[in-house]
Structure formats: C-alpha cells, structure tokens
Image (cartoon, rainbow, N blue to C red; front, side, top):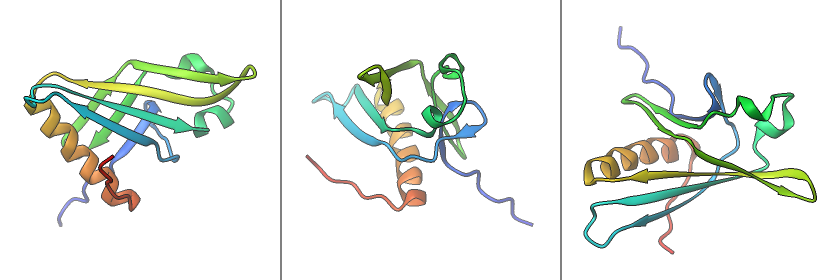
Length: 118
C-alpha cells in the first residue's frame, strides 16, 4: 500500500489547519539570494474560535517535506476588533527560496489557486 501524501496546510496553532486562504506577496532580491513572502489572512478562523490570541505562536507551513516556520506574525485591528493576521517568512538563500516555492506549489494546487505576476 502506498502511503497518502501529507496534506499541505497553514497553521497558527500547531495541529489546527487554517481554512481561510491568504493573499501572498513575494519579493526576491535581484541576485536571487534572498526573498520575503508576506501572507495576509483577512478574517482568519482563529478569530472566530474561542482561542486565546496567545495560542498563536507563529505560522507553520506543513507539507510532505516537513514544516517551514516563521514567528513574524502580527494581528491587525480595526476599531478595536481583530481584522486580519499578517505573517512574513524571510528566505535567506536560493535553497530556502526553492523549498518555499515547492511548498507554495503544493498549497496552491490543493487550494485551486493560481499565480499572478504583479
């Protein structure tokens, strides 16, 4: 029997996949040696749950190769109410960039997303 591939997911709290799909913006240095992915989750499910905001320990990007992690996560508030979560994932090498892009290709395929160059 062939084992099923691990599902690709994004999580703020380990073990609880985030169902809302983020906007993702990528920037890369001209020489390809570094880059930044900025995720914006408008109205993520973690705001609807009774979860304590302190439960959010980072953004975990899980796939069959393992987990990519960033702790650069901030909540955005409008009129005192949580509105969105933004996370930044910094890639400091071409190897990290390639690994991240493999994750994003899997995630996009599972979510039925496309890529637009802006």
